[in-house]
Amino acid sequence: MIQTAELEAQKTRILQPVISQDTTEEFHSGKIYCANCIHCKLIPAKPDREERYVLRIRCAAGKWKKKLGQEKMYKYCTITRRYLDSCDAYEEMGDTREFIRELRKNLPNRDEFFTLLEDKDEND
Image: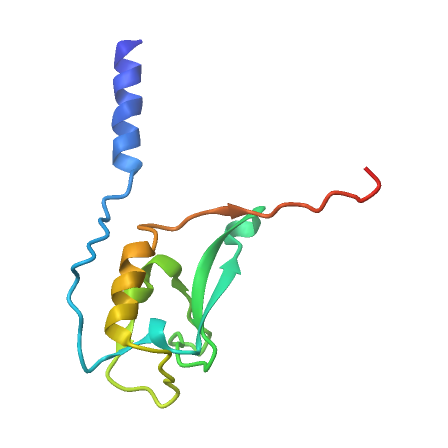
C-alpha cells in the first residue's frame, strides 16, 4: 500500500508542468508583439468536444496561417512569445514594453480549463 501511494505521488509530480513563468524574459525591441495588436483576439475553444473549454488567441487580420492555409490559433499562455519583424496589419494598442511586462506577470503558466454554466430556468 505504501508503494502504491509513492507511485501515485511520483506520477503526479511527473504530470505537473515544468514551465516557469519568468517575468524577466528578454524584451525584443524593434519587434512587433502580436499581443499588443488590435487584431489579436481571445476566443474560447472546446478540446475534443468536451463540456469545458480553453482560451486561444487568433489574428483577426488573418496573418497566422498553417502550411495548408488553415487559420492558426495559439495557446493564450504563450502570447507574449509571439512577435514578428514586420506586419502590414499591425495596429499598436499602447506602450508595448509595459504591456508585455504586465501581461507576463498576469498570464497563467499553462492552459486553464473553464466550464460553461447552464442558465437556470426562470420558473424554478
